Each structure stands twice: as structure tokens, then as C-alpha cells.
Length: 127
View 1 (tube, rainbow, N blue to C red):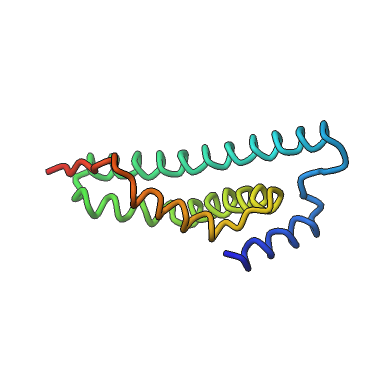
View 2 (cartoon, rainbow, N blue to C red):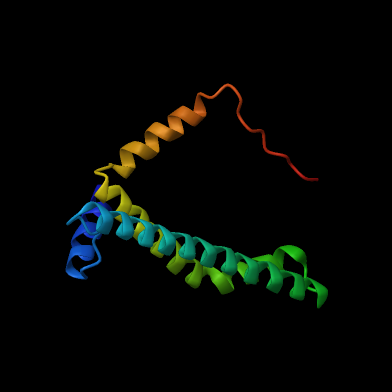
């Protein structure tokens, strides 16, 4: 993840896509703009999932087995879904770099915190 963050920093610099830091109002505007762009990319992930679910339902309605239909639908959105995840990761690394956060360290710390929670959510298994 450190390599990814460093690449992201260099890439954003090269493309002139860094969060602006020359004064507070411009920095605030840049942070908000990048946050809006991130939420747009997250919405695009939802759109790809919607496409996969719609395709699955169409294939099932045409007589295909549910599991096979879903596998085909997943394969059909895999590339675009990967692109949208990459876009999200680019914005997340941009924010992490701006705030000088080591994402790898933060990730493992958070997962350990979740592991040790007393009130863990329990997944519901459907028959």
C-alpha cells in the first residue's frame, strides 16, 4: 500500500490533480470537490452492481440457473467494476496522502479494532 500511495502522490502531481494548499478557502474547496468526485465514483460502483443484478434477473427469467446467471453477470461487469474501484482508490489515496495517513497501517489497526469489538454484527445466513 505504501508503494500505491507513493505512486498516487507522484501521479497526481504529474497530472496537476493534487489537493490545493495555497490558502484555506482554496484547500477547503479542493477537499470538497475531491470528496464529491469520490462519492460519484462510489455511485458508479452501485450502478455496476445494479447492472449485474438486472442481468442476473433477466437470465433467470429466460430459464438460466441462478448461480450460472449470476456468474455470467459478474463476469460482464468485472472490468468496469475494477475501473470504478480504481477510481475510488485514487481519491482515497489522495485524501490519505494529503492528511499524511498511512493507509496500510490504518487498515490493519481498524481491522484489529473491529475484531475486538464486543458488539459485533452477526451475519444472517439465508437458507
